[in-house]
Image 1: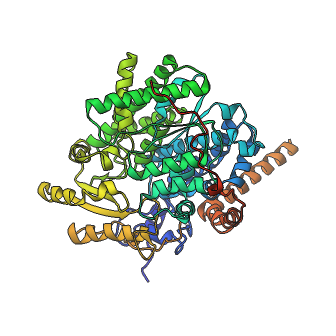
Image 2: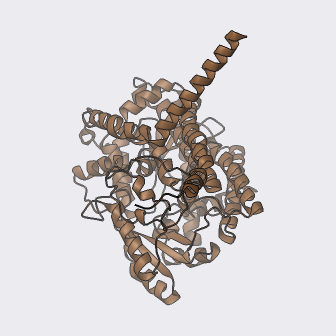
Image 3: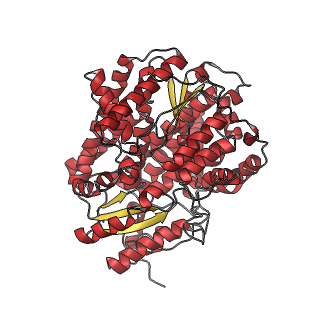
Length: 523
Length: 71
């Protein structure tokens, strides 16, 4: 048995164990219970960071989740009723603090502090949406269509919230139908979504289309979408499978519906003109259904706030790409970007989090603090992991310019440029690699995305030609049962990356305990 | 003065005990264990046994709403 070194023990207690593969380093994989992924105990990160995590992240977020519910709910009892009624709510969102845990694993100092603010904003925006669902849901109010119901506009989750700013000051709330019941659930508790995928297959739909579209339809098959709005705007999510989702939604929701297409062919002036017309038609539909005219003032006001958020994001990206001082980890960065651009300025939480993060970021820059000192590579994740969408401002100097930019914005929908946007756009990868100073690519190989299947070989050729290190991560979005027959998709993904790093890159892991562990039952 | 001292001591004791209790829950992930082993299985059972509307029995009523006219 190795002799204990009392000086090291005191140092480890005060600062936490060092991030090294050597004897005495952290072994984070050993903190997990077998299969469940629950923690035997949380990591001791040193006195300062352990207590920062306990009070300012764990405790703070538990308290603020309750405060958010009280703030956004018309009646907190509705929240309890909604939890009892909807599987996606009760089964998914209770373990939300474990989502933080997974995203902040092993982090210390400024990285821990800043990344947690991104998570905090995502949770607050999610509670905002959940409360809006329940405030208006006729099922929770004895079938009554209350004022909240009359002031809600349902839209497909890939239809950007930006489109509905003109009615925001008149009290109308945009609600992405599937973002909370489907999309966010996959990040917090990956078990829930399987019920919805199975539901849609149980009515005879084939199992091979994109699981995202399957789950979105499955919500309706299981009657698990709240009845919270009198009208619906659907779209094709720039994907062939989603056309069917839209049809099923039209059938099961049985409400006045406007199908707003995201053109499959874009970057063409004629298509853009068509898209501008479609957006205006959709606005006309909303005007007719609500009886409230389009408000340019409201549109301008929220677009300007959104543009400011975009400029803040560029400021952050600039520090991330040109220095070693960016304090946000990859997951917290990507998810924050996806959530905030999709939901838009429906709450002020994005702006508040951004300000806090910028403050920590500039502290790192000024004091030259490298929050990830052991970094060896800068990896860009590409394809079906779209965190760079909507990378633009929308002009507010005139209606015509705004509409033109809005059409571009709408066409740059999630997954367009990185998956189903055609050759020119998917190969923007090379520009982004340069822009973010990356030396490696993680290709998310979505096995059920027909759009990406055709370009696998083209990417391989380009990687060889350009001498780029790249590895593929086979997955089927939230359906962990598809990729690996052993039904341990996460372990399979880890194996693929580990094999690449050891056999191709000839590198040793910083924490060998994270190479292989069984978390097949985890959230 | 004695009473104040006693109250202060009591307050400090409660404060310390509360923080120790919170630390134990936090450090040993007792909240996660409770949710995973007790709350989630209970709720899952409830959702699995819930009566649901037979959505397939709904007719796909294409003519329910007037046809939308484009400008």
